[in-house]
Amino acid sequence: MATRSYQDAIDHLNTLQTSAADLEAAKVARTRMNPNPIPKMIEFLERIDHTCEDLNKLNVIHITGTKGKGSTSAFTDSIIRHAKPNWKVGLYTSPHLVAVRERIRIGGEPLSEEDFTKYFFDVWDKLQKNGPRTPDFPAMPNYFRYLTLMAFHVFLSEKVDATILEVGVGGVSDSTNIVPKPIVTGITALGLDHTSTLGKTIEAIAEKKGGIYKNGVPALSVNQPEEGLSVLKEKAEELQALYFMEVSSFPGSESIKLGLAGEHQVQNAALAVQMAHIFLSSMDGSDPRPEPLSQLPEPFATGLVNTKWPGRCQTVYDPNHQNTTWYLDGAHTAESLSCCVQWFVHPGVGLPVAHESPPTRFLIFNCTKGRSGLNLISEILDKTKELLLQHGSEVKVENFFDIVIFCSNVTYADGHFKGDLTSRSISTADLEELKKQHELADIWTELLPTFPREAIHVVASIEHAIQTLQRLSNPSDKMSVLVTGSLHLVGGLIEVAGLSSVAL
Image (cartoon, rainbow, N blue to C red; front, side):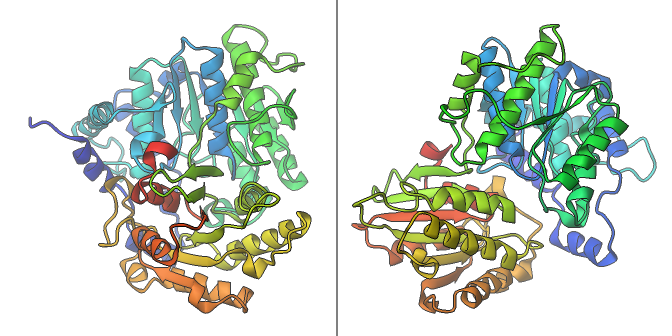
């Protein structure tokens, strides 16, 4: 057999994406693309010669939530690795920023291209050889399920000592939710996202997210709105969790400088600390409900300080343009955008400190189809206005950004994606007409009627956005560029702007 390359693996993987046409057909028919996927996921796992019981060997910390689940997973991974430096620790997250290999990490490092290719085709070949056993079950899983299967295969093959497993969407029906007995489960902040799948209320979303709780397993959550918290408590009781715990803080939180920026990260770190504490106590054969920490162990503190999670409230100094600073945050819900603005509209970040001249501020923004551009842009502007007043700034919200660029998530100006960033879920017609981007521009003008129309730009790709920024900027001026609204946008920008060496 001819040698198969990493690019071959990516090309095969991209065939498993759901097309825009199929997504639209499902929407019109008002049917879910993948009703009750768990039985299919279990059969896929068996077809690659593993069982659900095998997954218990991975010693799983299972994490879901609407916002903060990726950051919490990163904090937890870093704490465990610093507390147990001789352990092999697996981390599975989604989506990726630049390379799909980022989703599957061991020891904090993404799989190499060589290892990704090897394990990818291990799974691919077994699924091709061992066809469906149940009538009407598909021969191949979709994109996310495939990567989840592959992560399980990698972690079992590598015999990891611990696994941090982030849910994709929801909880109860997510393809990660086939581990019979995790060591501990945790839920980050709830909010309204993926409402067509999970429900339109916090209660409905909490019902789905709480589905990761398991019989005899500690069930944790951060502080939640009362209507969400009560549902999570009920789910923990219904599923016979070992106990339910609401986590609000951790010892020493006031004095520690977390590796991830933003006030909201304190809550995520608190959940990570408590889950790691319970996990390590259980793994040591001690009480699965250990006494609360009176002080933060040194490895925990080191883990929190050294946590890295690119594309989330991240400041990147451009290595090629010394006057350009990028502020990258993949926030894509109203709640997460509020946190993003809270971070950015702050002295020393997007606001100058005393006696500094203000930079030229750019916003590069996109949101995917199905999300309300009006709600998201309103959140950005309302929060910006509030914070400018709070910080005593003389700048008005309508003058805060000098130039706004709305672009698609297409990587390159020739209309192509970087292989790892290919998306088949975007309609060709929408891309050609830039419907979403023109809609966003109109919303911006409607909300800020005095904002100069010539300072609003709609472009077809991320590369076009960078070209526009370079064309409109003076190389000698300081530039602050906030990039937000989509993790795919942030990842594509890191790629096109040549920031990988400093951002990842």
